Amino acid sequence: MVKLPIQILLACALAWLLAQTAKVILLAWKQKTFKASWFAKQGRMPSSHSAVLAALSLALLLQEGISSLSVASLVLSVAIIRHLVHKGPEGHTFPEVLVGIAIGFLCAVFITQLL
Image 1 (cartoon, rainbow, N blue to C red):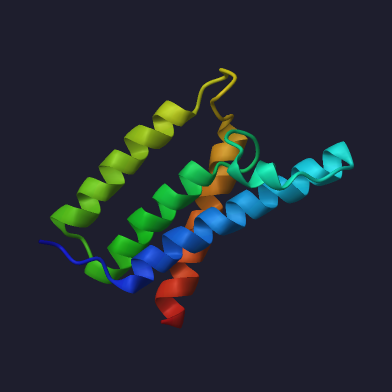
Image 2: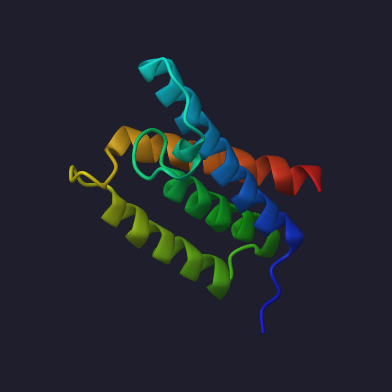
């Protein structure tokens, strides 16, 4: 059984929290109102799914190096992120996904270097 270091879980949690918070701030600014339910909202800028997957893949790579686990995580993350990018009402645009990936990468580097 593979044990995930706490840094990997923290990187994923931080990526989700930052992406969702950014999404709520952008929605509140655009709509000039605030709803706490927006923290559970899917879609829009930035993609929290992409942020979490990017944080997971990079944190695993930074912790484990190139291993079967980090490669499997990367391949699955790319497949899921690729699926997220479409113009349907529940999908994400390419810029939304790119910003999510950037957030995830920053969180993974920050957490793995901090702890």
